[in-house]
Length: 262
Image (cartoon, rainbow, N blue to C red):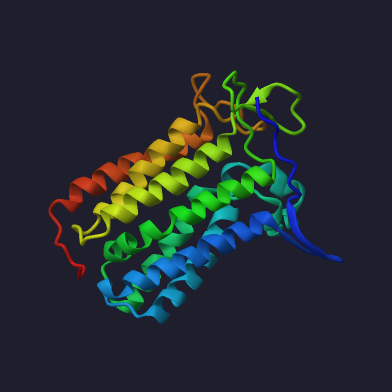
């Protein structure tokens, strides 16, 4: 059994001014996306400055969509009790699925502005996302969020405030799968031009599968519990459309052109 590391969720405190590790993880994600995106921008006819503009709109989409999605899917009662809670993003509570919708809306607007095919742009963006996802899960771990279920595995650890029994570090599993593994696969697949929609479909499929699997060792949200069959969680339910859309998009891509330059 391992000990849960005692890391202060506040990274920097200067009087009333505080910078939380959770917020810094978002900075890590956007900086990584900016750096990697600039390396491949010319493939789809974007300039390096365009990448900065795209990430600005994506940042608005991911924060607004992620917070609103969490409130609608997981925290409606908390929002109704404390309307200002939705603005306290640094306390945690972001939905990947809501953030994804926000990013897709931002990408749709940007693609129209730049006269790009929508899936040409999402294929470009998809490999830039996993580093931010992985960093965000590390932020969840530092924030002592997303506790896992009980385990006897040697790397289990007691979760703060939940007794001394070891639990799966489920947020670290997600950081590994949704972050490191997903990035490695997508960056490698997209190293050469692919048919339009393939990389986007692969992102949806793999994220959905990874998240679905981790839900088996992650505790469901206490105010929701299992929502069907005694084992189905909200996270599982929300990933099923992603898996289906990923498979459909991969099949659709087989009839699409290769429209990016090497």
